[in-house]
Length: 245
Image (cartoon, rainbow, N blue to C red; front, side, top):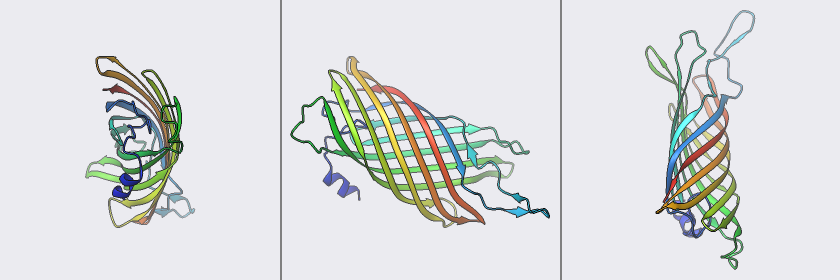
């Protein structure tokens, strides 16, 4: 799949502003994400005499996730972590870990206009993501959710360049395979990735500034594990700031 992706898309695609010929070679920085992650219709682990359902608590996360990112032509990597105070009586805290690796390029539907300041591009990307939600208990770390996703997507993007300033935007729907990192569960995952990025520079020497906003909606549908459905849904808004060179 990686070979086909590299063979069919333009190799001159630049970081996340797809298709730009003059974009910075690489960038790095920090990002802050605000997630809303929870289980869809959790199964009953037990029921009392009145028929009230008891489910596993704290399978949701909404506190900020702090990440570092690095990008260069055709690749974007992010690693993040967040913590949240538990509402359980035992007082254990929740921890979320997530990584994203995205390989991307751009098809140019209008190759006869290579010098146009505003261009329409068709981003093609391969997304690999890992997410783990766990709670630290007295007996050790207990995984509430852990999954790895590999998905392929194609979308639409636009790029505008004026002097040393570049603005790019994209929307890419993905669909792929999801696997549970514990047990033998497997299934599918669908996601929508959208974002806007501004790069300015170089300002001093070869150093410039990168600012970005991202939105991601994702759903995980995994086989039932330990009597509990592993169907989760999440969305997150993110802001990132960094330097490019």
